[in-house]
Image (cartoon, rainbow, N blue to C red):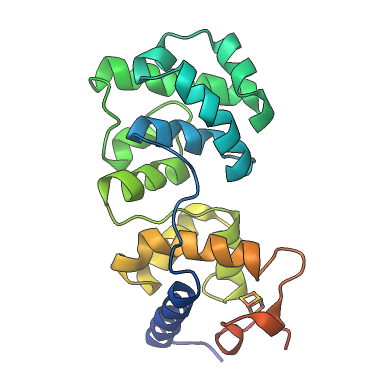
Length: 214
Ligand code: SF4
């Protein structure tokens, strides 16, 4: 039977409440001390674990201290410095290119609007929404692989297209929960709703999840 939008919103609210009780300290697991460091860390996190990114950025942010340091660096050297994150050549180009634009067009300040952020080389909606939510407190939602998978399991979406999911979830979850929701879902995806072996028997969402196996 088709679930009404109101019922979906009620289920979403209860899911958020339960996950927040389960993961009260849920937050972005990337280490950063500035908007630009978060931008760099988020670019590095594509197809890489946050744990690995944090290991790499510990030294990286000592060597490159400002957007200007990244903007005028050797891309070849930068690629070597971030090698263990994977896709290092592409990521080095994105980090250098976006830093250059930030220095030359934005006075070294990471812009605070979606349109300006996605106009930076190598910056997509995921990175942009992460910066907007974490730094500028703009209600925004990061759609990563955990969000795509678990929102599908919860029957809140039928698509795997990240932008479409972002727009659909904004209609279901309350605006005040958007930023935190991704962190809650990532924590749940790591601890319980694990990709290849969801632990439905131990899941606090079992009665709210149409994909539950118990
Ligand atoms: S009930 Fe199972 S499939 Fe649904 S969210 Fe929990 S672990 Fe995932």
